Amino acid sequence: MGSNVYGSSQLTNGIANQQKVVILTFDDGYKSQYSNAIPVMDKYGFKATLYIVCNYVGSGDNRMTWKEIKSLQQEGHDIASHTMNHNDLSKLPAQEVEYEVAQSKQCLLDQGINPKSFAYPFNGGSDDPSVINTVASYYGLARTATDPLAFLSCDSSDCTANRYSIMGWSHDSERKNNVYDDQQMLERFVQVVNSQNEYNANGVNVVPILIWHKIDNSNDEYSTSIDLFEAEIKYLYDNGFTVFTMADLVYDDAGKYLKISGSDDGAPIKNQNNFAARVADVEEDTALSTKDGLVTADAESSGEDDTVGEEETPTARDYDIISDKDETKLVEPPNSQSSFNDNEADETESQLPSAILQFLDEP
Image 1 (cartoon, rainbow, N blue to C red):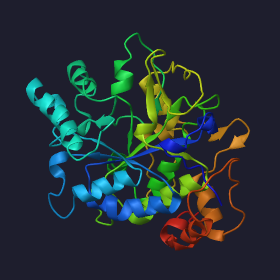
Image 2 (image 1 turned 180 degrees about the vertical axis):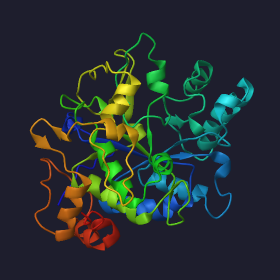
Image 3 (image 1 turned 135 degrees about the vertical axis):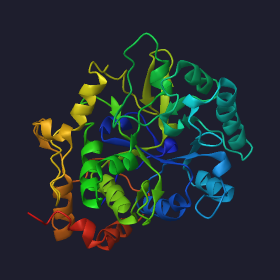
């Protein structure tokens, strides 16, 4: 078994042409990210971006310490800024916005960390030109959280918003808003990460940027169970996704577009669809099977299938049936690489709980 796993230093020309790409991010500096999420990602050789709220660091047992954060940076994870106090920037006067944005960068610099990107708390200010201009004075990129896919092209004469309002997908908000259980959430996760397929047939034009908060079994609103998180990360590994961090995104000043660092792709194809159309694209074929028959309104209205060309995209159902029966594994892509022992990854499959591996056995 192998995977496509590349950190910034491992990228070579053409690597992004493998098309199945994803960026992993975590917000707010929770201790469970360090104690529960990172060990899972270590099994598969994946790295992530962690957005840190400076005044949260070390403030109680549920937040990471600076020592832990710096150790993650040394291990190759990307550490980035999420303000000083996690305030909604759209509700602050200009002077306080400046403080939250600028001082949070200085705070990280004081710890020997030079953040490349910024994330807006509550998405606040990500559509406000004055807030965006403040963020642009200190960071190369900024991420918000309102769309499953980040389109890399710019469709307007002013491309500032494309660079400083990069779309991410909040795993926890989606779960909360739809009252998904682990079974439903894994299916939705699979749909989101594969929604890029129709756009990336000719290079990387879109990237799913995934956002988690707590990784624990607390059942809090913004918590993902450890079992579910491991099943999601294992799905990415088994299905040949190339995992990046936000530090791997770069902005081409001449062409006015975002791209994956180290890629020899040309400019991404411009997206001609509006926001509503993009959301509809992501929601295709999402009639989730649940005990209560819960289905989103967008999913009910979508009648498209989940195939791209002649190749069928593996679904959560296909994935779990294969994992459960331990039959022929999904074929790994060519040029697959691994930064750890393959036997270790094989062992983790049997360690996943039956509640995840067998959750689709019901008719």
